[in-house]
Image 1 (spheres, one colour):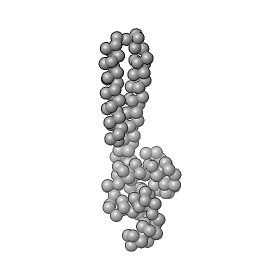
Image 2 (image 1 turned 60 degrees about the horizontal axis):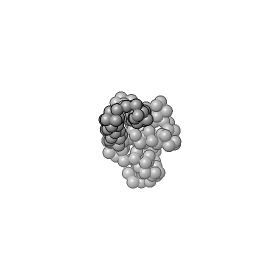
Image 3 (image 1 turned 90 degrees about the horizontal axis):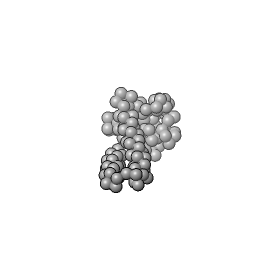
Image 4 (image 1 turned 135 degrees about the vertical axis):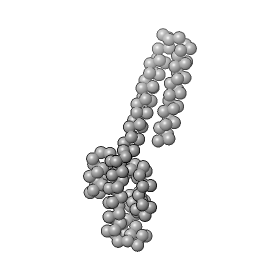
Length: 145
């Protein structure tokens, strides 16, 4: 994760931006199950369900400060998990690599199809089928991510 997340985990400022929300959503998707159930629920309610500290405090019989502290600790833990395990970073690298494969495949396919007159027809058909298969595989992988 970028350093802004680490700073945001300590200061809460990263949550104010859409990018910060998206990054915390990714962290929560990957590591939320590692948080204690109550902490995960409080974090989820505050970050993603648009509940106020007061609403959450009332629901969990806590103080607003207790809810705020729980959210802060959850942020720090999620960032710590990413720093130690790096799953979100690896996920993004694989996703970027798959998109790169797709772009390169499309480029080569365009070149092959653009030069049909210069290439044996059966070879063009075979290459086209091969590129379609690669596209299907990359689409499947990207959809599953």
